[in-house]
Image (cartoon, rainbow, N blue to C red; front, side):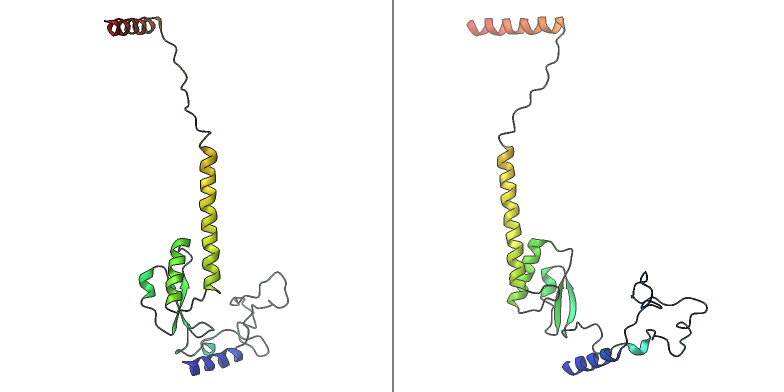
Length: 183
């Protein structure tokens, strides 16, 4: 595998930088490769003296195609079961959609198994950073609850105006209750 990676590096060093037509001269054009489409384009016609166009001949050897520069085959991880299937020549890339708590669990397991994580430089530093953030969030929630607690007072609903008939019924009921309570 190391031999194949050396071959890949040699081929990459021979590969030219593919830039967009006139990307070196015009500032408003990005240098990212775009295929030339003009009818009179010298680059599209592959005339001598013009920059190189990407073609199949510049590709890496098939044995090392898709490997990271560090020499590992990257595998996207979203849950713990996928960690068990990782081989020695493969490295982990944690999915962007994985939440912080689950990410901590995955990183701790990866650290136990001595796996390489490509999209995180220092696992220990990253874990401590996330745990600190989670603690701060918890403290902020507790503080907010404490501040909101005294503010919560029973809200009195506005009293409806009684009609004279309802008022008489209510007074009769109160009198009846008082009389029943005395006897």
